[in-house]
Image (cartoon, rainbow, N blue to C red; front, side):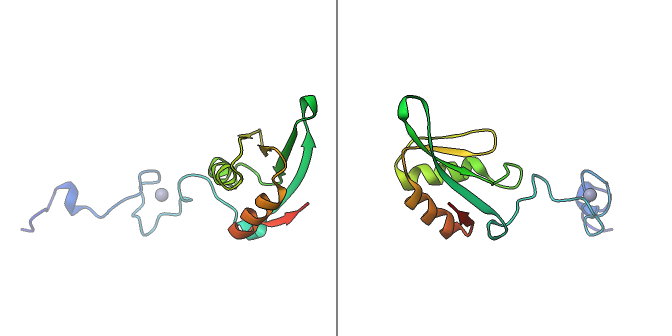
Length: 113
Ligand SMILES: [Zn+2]
């Protein structure tokens, strides 16, 4: 008799969702499917807000294909500026296009604007 026979340790691992053996499982990986930055084009623009305040906007990166909160944190650090995540774009307070362009290029995004 093997040490773990009949216990949970004896059973080969199965997928929680489809109950197939892990080696046969066809489930998509958990979480969202990210699109590689090199396949996406970020659109940079300078826009005017209330009372003439300038914001740098980054559009064209769908939230379901990108970790936008992480990207926002990196952008804020790189620019030393405040910023917000909107529905499907990022806004940074002030004109930070050169820094933003540099950071996005380093990550691998294609850039327009
Ligand atoms: Zn599965």
